Image (tube, rainbow, N blue to C red; front, top):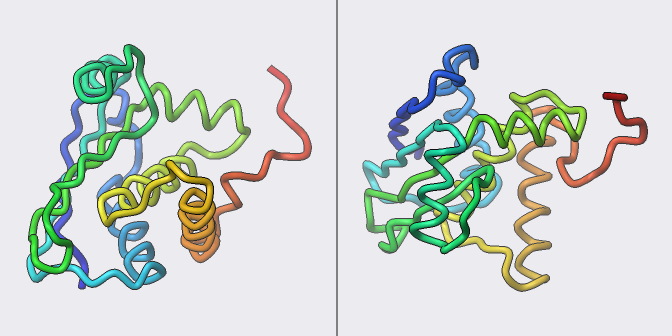
Length: 162
């Protein structure tokens, strides 16, 4: 079952990003399929597309890290199979765009990766221990490969010159 996805665009920089709702539905649907997770009836996810200032405030408040990051996830804490509200995924445009440019990959592909990564956190995955990180990264690779997106953890052989 696919969850209801609510998207809030909190920064003008996202205005030119084509069909974020469609991308989120595709990526999250594929991540559900690949992970085998069973969601509660009426499951909901909130996605906030913001700027670096917005995410830096959240990072400072919730993680005591005083800088922007690419994605933050806030799981609801309820049992996935019984809680309709899964949580929030927050993605910062400037950081995501900079990382995509540095990795010489399309921004859309990088945002797809951040959506998959953020959703996996909502359903209980983490990357604190090495074994958990490897499992999470393997699932991200599998999801993105199914969507025709290159391995996000593989460095390109030739980097674009600035």
